Length: 113
Length: 219
Image 1 (cartoon, chains in turn red, purple):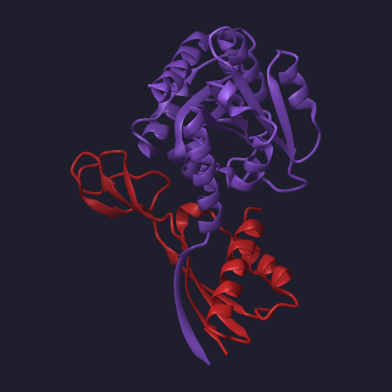
Image 2 (cartoon, rainbow over the protein chains, first blue to last red; image 1 turned 30 degrees about the vertical axis):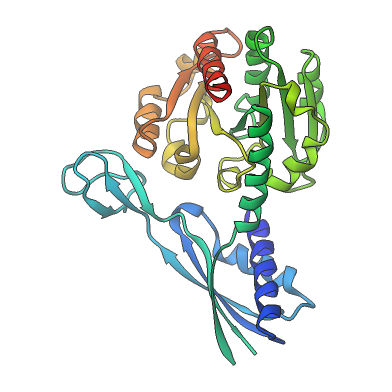
């Protein structure tokens, strides 16, 4: 249940940004979440809903761009989408590579009034 | 209505606290290991055996993270090593803030090695930095060789992987070769040790490697 800590961090940033922009209400928060973070969207929504109660972000929708796992082959440098459980290069068959995407856990933008 | 661009790492606040912790550790020259595993893999027992091997050469401190109870800190203190228990009260991982609070209990200048024993969990601790020099993970053969397939981030984040309970290999369906191959596919430079904390196999190699890591920070 790391979603609870993550939801708290989202709320802290959202409230700080809303105050900075003089907003009185936050209606949507857009996130980018990589596959490797193992964040469950439903758990995150539930935690955010509970934590944001009685704040200006109460009722805000969370929208999520899921970022797939991508790796760079450590044998042939080919960059590819990891579709299985381990990075296996589709070009040369080498098992193993550096992760170049899929670790994201970011707030991208939010709608405010 | 208007849209505000933010572009901010969600765990930024924790990462900043972790960096502050890391500065404190650097100033004192203390090497910090964040030890992670699932519950029951043998983290506290590995720590006890490691302390027995290194206590004469290194000044060691331990931070114990558990949802509740202080049995682990009590086990460590029986070895004459200072241990501070953090009870997370439900949280499934330690974060930078919890470690910062626990540091008040230590004289960091009087330590060479500080081990943070994280809450037993193969998901959440991988995501939260505490200011450590390295993450190390422990996996027992009884858990099976499919764990790298299910928890890739944990293996990617770990500089060392200690495979424990190898004395149980005749009784469990687990291939150590498969664990090693899969772990290396996730992190090529992962250092792997096969140990049995109850029989003593492999512990000298692990302790020697760890002591070398500590020495390299001291310079």
